[in-house]
Length: 233
Image (cartoon, rainbow, N blue to C red; front, side):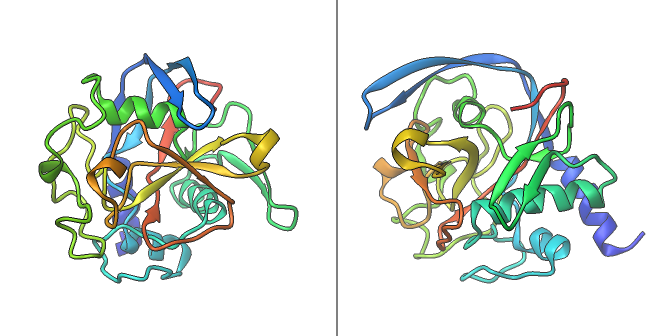
């Protein structure tokens, strides 16, 4: 077994089972609130690291190099392509259909390959049954502007939440699958969680931001999910 194989096995070991439930979501810009049901699924307890990303893609896009640091400066399109490549390298059916030329992404019916979490899945997993926008004192769980030294830090160094997930707040923001508001923002996608440069008020489970799927920045990365039952998001 080579080094890459060991890393693929590590990703599988990172996946945590998230129980089914429901979450009340809100959008402060539109002043709307809605309920979403979440089916049981798997979510990576760590952000995708630079080491894993490089092994899968042979690329090293991050501004703050370090094998154990989260990959950043990756677009939403980069993230979904990584998910498909990870599935392929792990012997799992790809979750997405991707047309790079038209920037079109769809879902393979019934596939359970690696994917991005949905907006609802992300917030539900972040809160982890606590009902709180910060599931513990921020210094204990997150890298933010007061303790990050203005850079990313290694994954898994702060305390996890009740579901065993690390860095859900701070370190880097995380791309989600969902479109933000197609009628107003077109193809813009949601990202969540706050990053290393954010003040405490930016690192909240309820914060939702948006950007074009080709956008990259040095405090935006992702983690991976997998569906358990047929019929993903």
